[in-house]
View 1 (cartoon, rainbow, N blue to C red):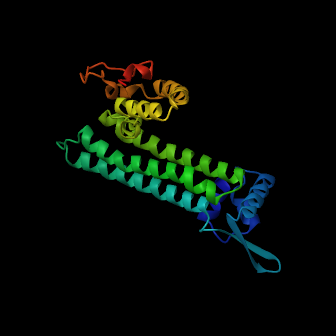
View 2 (cartoon, rainbow, N blue to C red):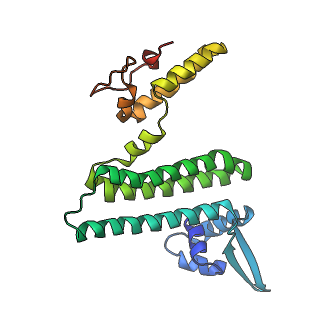
View 3 (cartoon, rainbow, N blue to C red):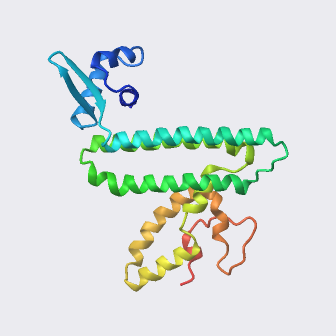
Amino acid sequence: MMVLNHIIKNPNQTENQIVTDLKGKYSRVPIRKTLRFLSKNNIIIIKQINSNKYEIIPNYNHLLVILMQDLKNLDEKTLILIHQLELAIRKQKNLAIDNDTIQSLYFMYQHQILVYLLKALFVWPSAIKDNEMLGTMYLTLFTRLRDILTTLEIKISSKFHIAMKKSVIDNLFNLNPDAINQIVKQSKKYDIDLAVEKVLDIIWKNGLLFAPEVGYKFHSIDGNIKQNDKIPNDWRDLVKY
């Protein structure tokens, strides 16, 4: 989306000006192809200035433009936040910033991740009918969001020994023993337990690979929490019903 980024930063340029500015990064043909795609999907607006001149501006009401501006602002404000935190640490050498404090900063980003996920799943598919455009939205979101979270991890986590991934999982990973037992109980009530089991088998396998660090949530069902608890290999080990 470098072409659209350039248009957002430099509105009211002509096609030739855009091609010239991006020379060395993209050739003329791919840029024109991108401009046609953006125009077709109403992401940019081509204004006629006179009979020989057309200027290109972003459509500030389009979801992709809104998303890119939101992510750009979030990125910029994140860098400012990190810079101010580093200044505070340097100015006050005895200032103790513990992991709880850093994790509280992460809560903001966890909230934003969830908001974007909800938009991507429930808002965009209804508003955008073109699959290529929808794919562009997803690619833009997850690429830029990952860049922001990487910046946080490099600048903060490495110093304070707290992982962004673990922090997010702690708050969004809800398939704990209580949830498992509730699911199984309700599925038996409606005689859909066999179908539910097949879905849980897939979900559980994915969870084991992705989120082993939430093992503490899967303490033994008698209520005794152990130091080295791990996620059971089979979710059935957690079932009480």
